[in-house]
Length: 170
Image (cartoon, helix red, strand yellow):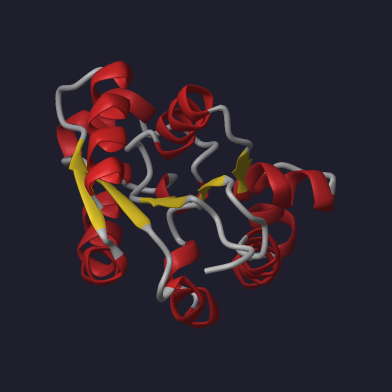
C-alpha cells in the first residue's frame, strides 16, 4: 500500500500504545505519529480539556480527521487513541493496514495509568468503566488486528522486541 504507515498501534487505555510505538519507531529509525498528540497540537488543548470543554463528539471528530490524515503518511509508526478504532470511518480506513493490537488486563492497566482524571472516559468508577469500555472495544480491536502482543507483566523493551519480531514475520 503506497502512502501507508508501517504499522498502526491500537489498544485500550493503559496498554502503552504511545510508549511501545515510540520504541518501535526508535529501533527502526522511523517517524512516530501519535494521534492524541496530533489532536492536541491542532486543537491547542489537551485531550482531557477537549472532552470537558467541547464534549466527546467534538473530540471524536477531531480524532477522526487526525487519524485519516495520518493514515496517508508513508512508513510511519502510528499510535491511535484507544477509542479511535471505534469510529466507523477509522474502522473502515484501517482495513488493509498492518495493525498491532497491544492487549492488557485490568490489573496491569490500573498499575500503569492509576485511573487518574486525565483519562476522561475513566474518571467515574474507573475500574468498572475500563472493564466496560474494554468489553465493548475488544471485538473491534481483535477484528482489525493483523498482529497481537500481550503486554501483561512485561517491560517496554520486551514488548517492543516481540512486536518487532512479529512485524518481521508478518
